[in-house]
Image (cartoon, rainbow, N blue to C red; front, side, top):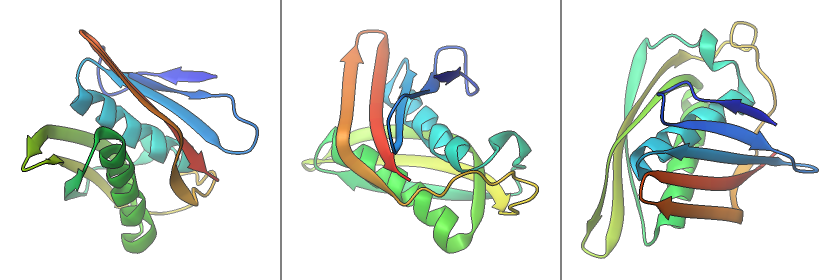
Length: 151
């Protein structure tokens, strides 16, 4: 069980034990920070994020009917940037999560560079994000998200 807290002193992530897939737990003082850590954990499973340089950035905007759907859609959006645009991402900032007209909306930014399997130390392929075992726990000073990645 690996635990890291690279984006800030209050947030972090760790990989929990699971037989066949990757079970991830990410946390932060706010929902935005927990989601940012979740994005970093997703990419750390696929590659070495320490080797990613912020040469290009992408704006992220997504929404969901509830917080779980929002987390799913956010991670799916990041995975699509890797699969379609071949971007290795290493910096994740969710700037806002707001309730607007019955939907929860997320705005954020991510940065990285074109993926190079050798330089970025390619690890495992993430086939998809799942709702299975997904949890979001909110406490006064901490938000924790858990999600399962299909490998």
